[in-house]
Image (cartoon, rainbow, N blue to C red; front, top):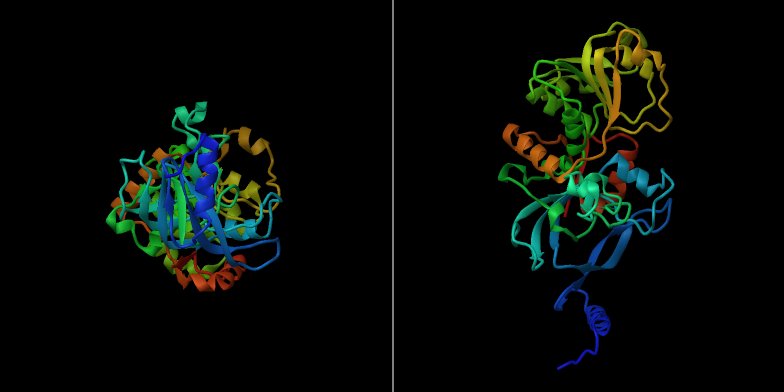
Length: 367
């Protein structure tokens, strides 16, 4: 029997014993530790390679065996340090579906065997003004995959159970995985703008986020125009719910759409003539940005004021309540991503495909 003189010595011994084996866990009275294997980028410009890290798992955490994860354009930007704040080593992938393997002793809502979805945000302080108001996505102490936590290109992940969302049976497959971020972000932007049934709306950019936004808006009873730079997707976009498809780069065609739309949501990562899109809004119409163009967005301020009173808003993921609402809506209407399924061993090739825009909407990896 070990005698520990204080709490710190106890913690030190726990860490020591946790490092002795890789595939097994040694439980202690308060936290425990596990080795997790994944694929990481060790330096900017390098390829994904095998990587292992030790994760401390608390009484509020669940350990999830990953079944599916994705590689998005955002992941490739983190890999390349596009925004200048990537911390290496980096295990990307911020959309995950998996099965709960272990449950912390403080958890009653989830059990072993539950299938859960995990998105970009994996913790919050639950004490600040935003958390207390149910807006955890604005918590200044939040932890995010690709920013402060390792992601889904791994065999397992451990997160605060409050950010592991139990999935209904019809959303447990591979093509539901993108809902966890690519679905949540536009859904909340649409909700924030107060879009109502019967309104005329448009989706600018129809990649991973945009094709889900079309489905949400269609099932909300809106008339949806898809703005895409490629005509090869026209038939599929109409199957997803678009009533019309417009060339997003054709200025002559866009100029004919002045004052036609109540709401436009941009999921595009391209630099476009935003003056034309603002003009396409009706008076009191709203343009919502959820995609991130590589350059500054430029437009004439007078278009927001003169005879119009138009608005521009942005959206950043969503709260836990938003996530639950989105999943319920997607389950009710059987909304899922269109995409391609790959093996985890193909991660480097998939990342290149996503970067070069050669994947049809969503790239999903299976463990």
